[in-house]
Length: 233
Image 1 (cartoon, rainbow, N blue to C red):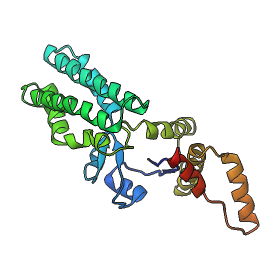
Image 2 (cartoon, rainbow, N blue to C red; image 1 turned 135 degrees about the vertical axis):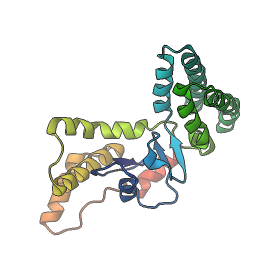
Image 3 (cartoon, one colour; image 1 turned 90 degrees about the vertical axis):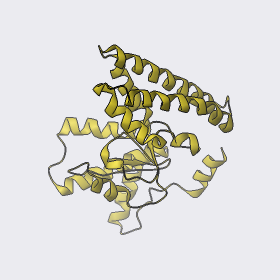
Image 4 (cartoon, rainbow, N blue to C red; image 1 turned 120 degrees about the horizontal axis):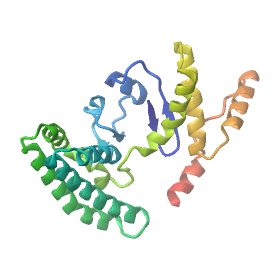
């Protein structure tokens, strides 16, 4: 499991993906925005953004169905998803303002939620459950359109997890609590340094020197002037 912010990432290795593991990693920070898939462990979050990349895969599964009713709704939902990301990319590229983006999203949201209601009342078992869940928690689909700076997907976390997934496949994971803590910390250092464009190797050398000479270890937090520069940019 990983929590990713603009300047750092924190990894945790747990025996379960239950809600207790999430709380152990991020605590009860009230301001947190969790960009996630639709796993049940996230359902008590105060402010969530459900990942549209995961939704796209679900819509494609509907499109691939042999059931014509399911296939049609899949195409209709995917069409709205494509329109949504056309406007998102335009905003990201500086072609439209935040206000313009919000105005363009409003009719897309209205049509998308109408399609969810259509699926919920379709009588088709392949559609009812998914559409009911999405409509019930529909506000979590649009957090990124209300709060500027939130991403519509959890691709950032997926990219951060990739090295950890590769490591696990090659090494078969860890065999002890101490091993898990070591891997958590090494992954945290590696990804945090990448986010800050720092050398992970140099950080570890400096940290080991500080340990042997009984000095204060280097911080993984970026200098304030660095964060200020990024905000100004």
